[in-house]
Length: 283
Ligand code: A3P
Image 1 (cartoon, rainbow, N blue to C red):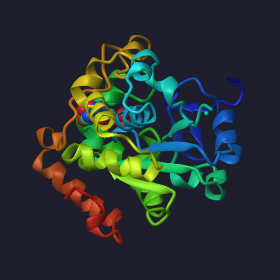
Image 2: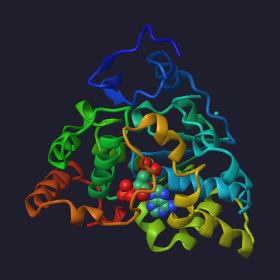
Image 3: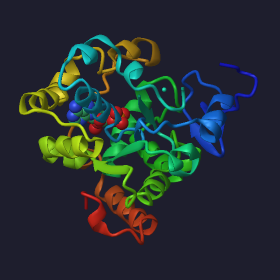
Image 4: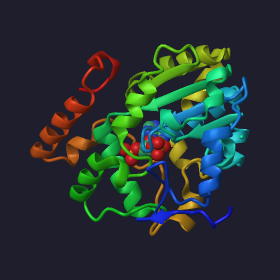
C-alpha cells in the first residue's frame, strides 16, 4: 500500500476522525472502500466492533458454508477466509461503523451479520488484546484503558463503542441485517447457529449442524492454529497470544471495581438513552 497519505498519530491511521489500526493498509484504501467498494448481492459481511466475538462468528460462517466440513478451517488462516472489507473480497469482515460502511450495501441484496457484546467485556477483552499486540496504542493499565474507552474517538481502535452500536442498531428492522450477540451465542449456540442458517437460507442436516457447533467451540477453536491467530502473534505481538483468551461472559466482574462499574453504568445510560433495554442481552 502507498504510504504517501498515511496520517499517523498516536499509533493509529486516522480517517474521518476515526482511529484505524495500523495493519498495512493505507489511507487511500480505507477512503476508497468507504466511498466506492461495491458489495455484491451474494456477499455476506460479518460486522463488529473489535473484541465482540468477530473471529468466533467468522468460524461459524465458514463452517456453515462448508456444511460442517473442517478441511477449509484447518488449512486456510482465518484472515484469508474472510478478508477484511477494509482490505479488499464471499465472506467479508468489517469493523466499520455504520456511517462509513460502503453505500453500495444499501442498494444490494447482500447480508450483514452484526455481532455485539456486553461493552464491559469488550473493554476487558480489548485491554488485554491491545496491550499485547503491536498495531495500536498500548494502554499501560486497565484504569487507563477504562478512560480511553469512554473517550472513544481519540483513543481506541474504531472509535466509540457507543457510536458503533447506535449506528448499526438503526438497521435492526432491515431484512438484510441480522443482529446477534456474543451472549446469545454463549447461552444457546445451537439455536443461534440455526438462526444464522435461516437468515442465510442455508439448510444443514443434523450431523452438519453438530459439526459446526463442535468445531466452532472455544476449546476446538483454541486448538486450531488457522483460527486462533497464533501465527500472527509471532509477528504482531510483543508476546505469545491467542485470540481465544478466556471466552466467557461477565469477565468484567473479575476486573472492574465497584466504582468503575457504577461509572460505566452511568455513562451507558446516558449514551444509550432511547434504546429499549430489551434489545440488549446484558444488564
Ligand atoms: P476474551 O478476550 O474475553 O476471551 P474478536 O474476535 O472480536 O476480537 O473477539 C475476541 C473475543 O472473542 C475474545 O474474548 C475471545 O476469547 C472470544 N472468542 C473467540 N472465539 C471464541 C469461541 N469459539 N467461543 C467463545 N468466545 C470466543
